[in-house]
Image (cartoon, rainbow, N blue to C red):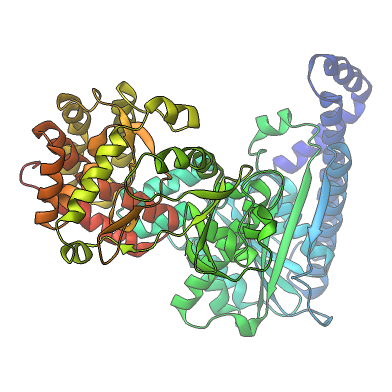
Length: 638
């Protein structure tokens, strides 16, 4: 009674003052960046108001003709209202496309039915929600395909007169702020239950528009609620919010004959508000839309299976977005869900893969050894190892490693991987395989005491490697104050990423430990000694055979810093006799021993972050248990 007449009045005022308004907009365009931004906006406003007024008048006519709304739910009048919706959205979007230089790229190959059926079976549409107008685009597309869409939307959209009027006359539901919990789910169930052929129910399982801030906020909220597994799953998704399953499950349950379509788009993400819209005019945007159709017989039946199925589809949607926003923005396994296991490019130039980096290897038989978060490792003919970085930052450190390994090989008494081929563009390395098995406590226990002397001699020789040569090769120099600053940052990061995963009564001890790390390092002289360190010395990276140690591998973390870091594993995760012999050979003093113990306590914290980054629940669980054992359960720290 208020807004509809106000629209008519505003349209009349703008039309009658259009010459003056056009002159003012053209003059103002001189002072705004972009191509005639105020004039474009004025033109769109004029078309919008004229369209809104014409539609409201048409809807008023339908209301009168249907017996003042008494027969509005009958088939004839429902069809008339959907026809008005189709015309309204077609004109609105065509105008926006021309005025704002929008381009649409539709990929519907995987959404088409193998045979044409009229009317088509009912359809449930689960769509990503990001940017203004995506609901208009989706409803417009469904109307053009001959569907009659039903939609659940925010109550604030009732302030748009045409939307308010027409969607109160066709099956739809407005969720108002403060509505009781479950209101939206109940509305979805009611709308789905009455769907027949030719109808489509549109849902946005995320519940709201995606923004990076909302993603971070939702993850933090899950952490606060103690739902750490859900937070980990949400963290894996980089360009979507975790789906809320209530509405989708209700729709699947109450529309047993419906097929499902998943829809994702990109191109409107940076236009989340009125200010962004103004700054973005003309948009000059390419809006890419991808859709998949899932036949009814491929939809799981059990509720738990449907939850997992929906989560899998949301990862696939995120993978599609990752390919457009940048493949390094999400875990590899998310991308692989779409790409069928093909690894992404690491740099610009040619694909990062075995034969992309080393075409001269030809058709040599290969064996996959490791498909890790940092690198893909392949064995060729049982002798050559190829390591291909999976992320740009890993590629950068790998290049420095490849330059420095020959320097190390000439100085160290144990073998290290010597490059026989490198790909500078991607940081990939080919080197000879170093024989032997991981230096587990069992393996070390079976060796004679010379193994401990071998490791001590290796560490002693590593300390004598020229620091200047390491810097020249590109090895990161983190000695002195930089070492303390690095651990200060690490502890702040662990407080945010690891501590929330501990029980509430464990967090205080953990935070006190983290708060004391830098102080303890400084007090024991961590910043006073800077040498080349392996920085990831552990059982998996020290190789041993029947006669003793054979080599040290995986130098990806080599740096200049505190040599006590390389003693964390030998002094604490090896048999007591072995650890004692290493300490005696190196004449480890009390300060160095204390720093090594501190680094040992910190080791599983990196494991927790690795588990989060890769989505490996076993690594995450084991690392958290180790954090509890080494830090939280320590009487000395408590």
